Length: 148
Image (cartoon, rainbow, N blue to C red; front, side):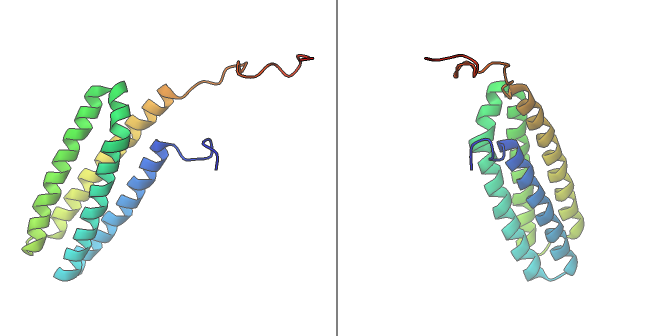
């Protein structure tokens, strides 16, 4: 696979957001079943998945994004902190069997809105920073030139 064939970081982010969206549906379903053990296990798995995603984003994407738009990057970091706090609170509620479906749906709504915002922001940055192909590639001589 050549570098041109690899998905962009934004494409990878969008794919991860889609995976998290599917996991959110599964999480809501697990809580809807009413089985505390199933709900707890689903929540723990989701928490691990989301934590890995946020760490990946903060380690790989946000440093570059901050060079282009430091205010938006700071806002994303702040939103991640709020999301982590919400997850921590729900984790405690899940362990105590207090978390219910509406709270999980609220979390899903927050995460989906955050993901849509990130997808748009990163698309805009990718568009602004994408190199524009020039008419002449200066690294190679024109094909019509005789090099003898």
